[in-house]
Amino acid sequence: MSECIFCRIVKGEIPSRKVYEDDDMLAFHDINPVAPVHFMIIPKKHVDSLAHVTGEHVPVLGKMLAKAGALAREQGSPEGFRTIVNTGRIGRQDVYHLHIHVIGGTQPLPRMIAKE
Ligand code: 5GP
Ligand code: ZN
Image 1 (cartoon, rainbow, N blue to C red):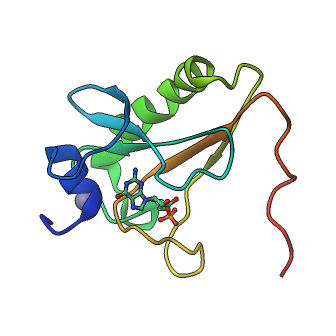
Image 2 (cartoon, rainbow, N blue to C red):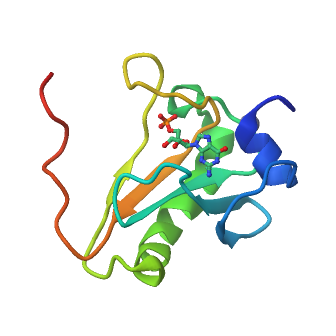
């Protein structure tokens, strides 16, 4: 999956503003933030989406979620945040490398999603 843009970010072939990195996952700021705090947490090992997750991904998914709160606080979202995992065509996923959006700031976000 070398053409995958998030795999290329993992490899350092595309620059990103890193928030956190360890052996299994990477967090980096969204290039087009929708709120004062908006970064994504991704597994380093490619998986297309949440719909493609199997048992082998459970440990890394747990690590990603477990890290979200501390990273959100560090990045300036001290009283909570929103996590979004857009999945597939229905979920309007644009980049097919699983990612958890972490969105927040110091003011409450709009409620959930708007009706179209
Ligand atoms: P999705 O719609 O798949 O849930 O979200 C993909 C996100 O990736 C979008 O919010 C978009 O702004 C972000 N994005 C797309 N390309 C890049 C990139 O090259 N670098 C970074 N940092 N974010 C990107
Ligand atoms: Zn990838």
